[in-house]
Each structure stands twice: as C-alpha cells, then as structure tokens.
Length: 382
Image (cartoon, rainbow, N blue to C red):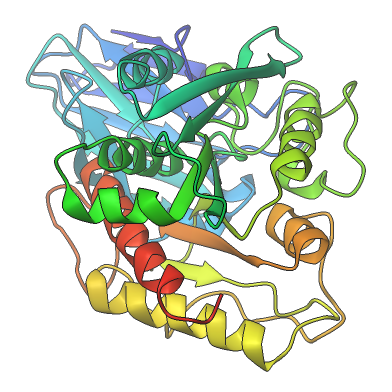
C-alpha cells in the first residue's frame, strides 16, 4: 500500500502505512499546515495498492485543526475516477479522525471536499473565452507566479444605466465548493439561450474572479496564500509583497466601482447555506437592511438548500471588521456586499446521504443566486 499527495491541492503527511498480521491495512496520517501559518484542515491524498484490503485510516492531528467541530458528524469525500465524489462516514474520538474503508479499485482518492484543480480552473477560463459575452483581463501574478484571472461578462452594448456586480471566490483555497459555485455561475451567465440570463445581462455587467488564491489552491492550503496570509483579512491595506491577490483585485474594483458584491466561501462547521451581511458598518441603515433581507429571502424562495434562520450572528453597528472583503468594499462603495457560505458537510434540512453537499449542488445554488440578483435589480431597492 502507498499514500501519495504530490499533486495539485494534495495535502497529507504519512506517519505509517502497513498491512498488519490479520490482513488489515493500518494507516496513520497528519494534515500538513499551510506554509508560514498555523492553519490546517484541508487534506487530499491517494491510497494505492489496497484493492480488497480492509483499511483503517486515522488522521491523528484532526483535533488540533483550525476548526475541530468541522470533523464532527463529518463524512469524508472519496472518488475512484476524480469526477464523482461520494461520501463515507467517519468518527472523531479524542482528536483523531478515523474511518474504515475497503477499496474496490487499485487506487482511491480521499479529500476534505471535492477538489477543484488549477487545471480545471484553466479549462474554465479557456472554455469561457469562446463566448462573445466574455472578456478576460490578466490582473497580475501571485507570489508563486500563477496568473490572477478576471472575467468580465456582459452584453456588448453601451447602456450607461447598467449596474456593476463583482463576484469573487476561493479567498480561502480549501473551500473548493466556492469555485464549483463559480463554475456554475459562469456557465449560466454565458448561456446565450437562457432568457433570464439575457435579461440579467441587460441590466448588469459582471466582474468575476473565479479563484482569488491560486497559490494556496495548488499547495493544498486551507486558508492562506503562499506567504501564509489569510486574504480575507488583508483588505484595508494589501501589499504586493504579502497579498498581491487582494491588492490587484481591490485596485480593479475601485477602477470600475460596484453596485453589488458577492464573496463566495465554505464553512467547515455549520451544516447550512447562508449569507452574512455587513451590519457592523457605522453607515448601516434601514435601507441597507431591507436590501440584505430582500436578497436573502428571495434566495431562500428560489433554492431549498438555502435558509435564513442559521448563520453567523450579525455584528453590532460600528463593530465591523474592515479587513474583510465585503465589509471593506461595502464601506468604500456604499453597496450591498454579502458573503455566501456553503457547508463542507451537508445541509441538515435537505441532506443527501450519497453525496452530501457537493460540487453539483454548489453549481445549482449559483444559478439561484443569479436569479436572486435579477429580482434584486428590479426590486427598486438599489
């Protein structure tokens, strides 16, 4: 048997991997920390040579991870073909995450969530470029020398009354569901046969950053970039030396302005889809609350996976954390800016025993989010 992780987004350290006397595979592992950081939780590795062998896999340092409750009632993702990712039960005892698994094939992949590789990212950018609705701008490069891609999607007209919507995803690279969401968003926006999309693009131009953190994504990080920076705490004064991703995107945002912003994330612990607003801003008022309430309520009516009862408690007015993307940009541009959260586990009210929260459900939620944006734009609240 052999454990490997030297591939895009791979992360694991092998403590031991052996078949013991009774023919059972005993595998002990550690999750590697993000570079220059104490964060860790994302894992992605392959088990080879264990077809038909009953294996016990243990991640020994799970209890010391960034969000240990994220491993409670958690079902690991596994795949034989790296396309379909199924779920398998685990247990967390005394800080050790363990599960028993008997592979049906010579190799099987395990991951914290369905991975979204940088190769798939490049395929998404290339495929999108074939649409007349699309234009691409290379904002610059990351610390590891990877491209930071900005997509603009809009109808080729000169309607000066159009609104500007920015959507960014995967500031935290381990939250791969965010880029699955973005794939669904881009596919829907580029669907020239969809009348709803055409109506939306008649009112709004979209600026999309599908992956804010390419270095962390490729390195197998949970939360940080190559310098160990949590990008969603860099928005007050980003630098090219420590967080060029935020520096370049914020610069582009200030060039275009914005009327609406969505930052797409995943939450390790909470088994819900929900939206966090910017209620902590000093400028928060009844109109801003009405905008936020309308969007959240509309989205809950459009998609049964989204709900409004559970989520992060709103901050008191005047206590906003301006280092965060949505708070910073809502303050600068006086617009509705929201953070969308999806679960690593599953939604409790609409649970899926086979797949849990999945890439496909993330993509479908993106479709609903776009429909909610269309309804918001015609609501008269903007």
